Length: 290
Image 1: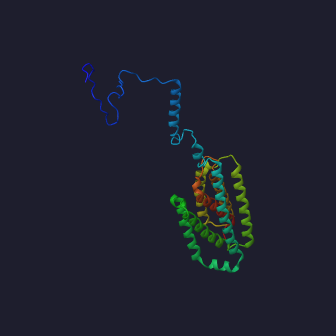
Image 2: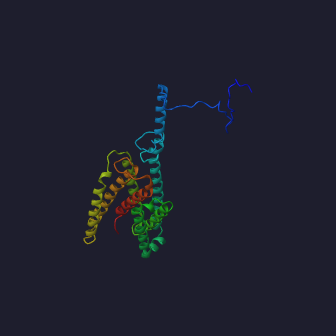
Image 3: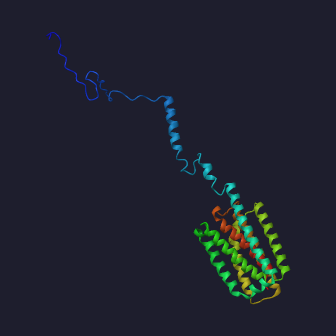
């Protein structure tokens, strides 16, 4: 060993395979400042932040985003939803009216059926009880009127029971009179529905007024039972047909959803039930008492 040569310590590699001489120099973070953002990097960061907040626009209903058309397509303001709702209601209503007036024709034209239904009062009372219970349940209980298929079952029961009641009442009248009243009722109903579809005048705001008139009309009918005359019977029938014609106009506007008040698209059973009852009551009041 040469004494003039400096002593160099032996370098041993660490666990990563680096020796002491190959280790990188230490870096001091306290002596250097972070690099400043350039204009391009700032713009890119702003775009990234804006894109990040855009994902919350589907939660905020006031914000407009790509999900807004999807959400608005399910609202009642959308024309496709409204037209499908109106089509469904009128399809159900057509089936109800065809069945009811078919039962009326059978009970009126067939003398054997007419004799049977006129002598069985218990069947009429049973159908009235079924109609009252199911109709009140459909009107007042939304969980029942919106739950498929129980709402359809309830509407079928209402249609069957009311058809039997109307057919029984019509069996006590002359066949020619019943046919004429059916035709008049259909003409009045179609005219009111067509007028309600194209008018811009809002009749839905007068629904409370009609309810008050309905209570007064019930009281008038109560007094007419004690002071019965042919003239009062005609007046009572005409006023009843006029009152429920106004109800039919308002219910049609509620269904079409173009005015101040409207029905939800989920209420297609209640909409069909209301319009069906309006038309049947117009028929009964025009038919009169016997």
